[in-house]
Amino acid sequence: MESKGLKVILHASAFFAPLLVPILFYILISDDQIKRLSIQALLFQLVMGALIIVSVIFSAILIGIPFLIIFSIMGIVVPIIGIVNALNDTDWDYPIVGSWY
Image (cartoon, rainbow, N blue to C red):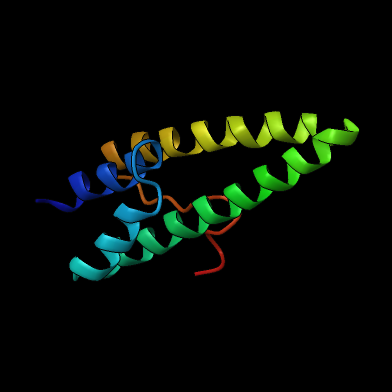
């Protein structure tokens, strides 16, 4: 499978297997660009999960509700942006974690 298709699957995995697919791609695929993107996708999902959990906890005192809404929207929109960029063969890094790796 070509790199473009792997990138689309990797970004789309946020909706069906956000942790499993990036880990499998990192282990099984030898392309350095796919490995880098899989680590970014995995880190993004972990960070977003942590942020959503913290927002849920703070929602009890009503401070976390806006953050919960924002992070939930980000968890949906960012992978879609990644899919579109992968289909256009544009290099793209995940926000928040793109500069980490």
